[in-house]
Length: 373
Image (tube, rainbow, N blue to C red; front, side):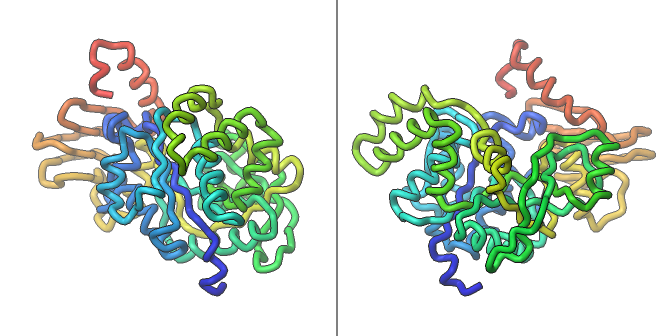
């Protein structure tokens, strides 16, 4: 694919959410996308940026994030221009984040193709990732809304799935297939059946489309929300921005783009999926962190450590310890343990109960110590 074919492609990085299942590492003021959650040496946001720059260059990446995260986002991404950071006064979920970015970019660059890539996902085999994105851009250029589904490495109950149907036979996108349906996180038996069938891909929440095509779909399915987004976009690059945002933003519905664009498009046979043959994880809980760390580890210790290895001792144990303090941590006789030690909070759980961390967060909201959130 000639480099010039990507000249009208713009990447959007929605950088929001608290990541409550990763508390106490992920906090409201410093959520997981700003952290080196997996111990790779790079924050998830920075890794996302570096993965996209070869496709777009530094000037065609837009980041949508909360106002409270603006300073650290700019610190981590010094190449990001002021024009390409969209600050939300309050999170309104992915339809508003992606839709507003699409509307702004369409006004600045009519005919733009946009791709949305979450700031808090972990991806390996970046060359294969970029190959899939290039193919998705070709399909989007032909008027389709496109998603990238991940070829499952094993049955997983942690992710939603996409059922891929017949080939689309699009020029320049030979692997594009029609999306027959989206399905929610399955149980173990169903996940095994999905993977064995060869018809299902993990839903990674990546969407690529012409900006106007995405906005048209949104207008058809959620006209009031689309009207509000367009009203803000009309004022965005003018001196009316602040007044219009203040008036319109509180009226915007909080809803995921899966429900306003992706699923309705799939029901009409208008959504294509490109299979992605690269490592991907949304790092949604500490079971995922453990899985990612073990896959990347070159050591053979039963207890993996993110932090100071010398301050962690273990015997007859397995799992992961994440340490951000000077305390010595000792683990004995426990399997699949998860220990997260920060300056003001300590979490102890195990892999099978990692999803319950969100319940701890809900309890803390009602407790006498909400400051640790």
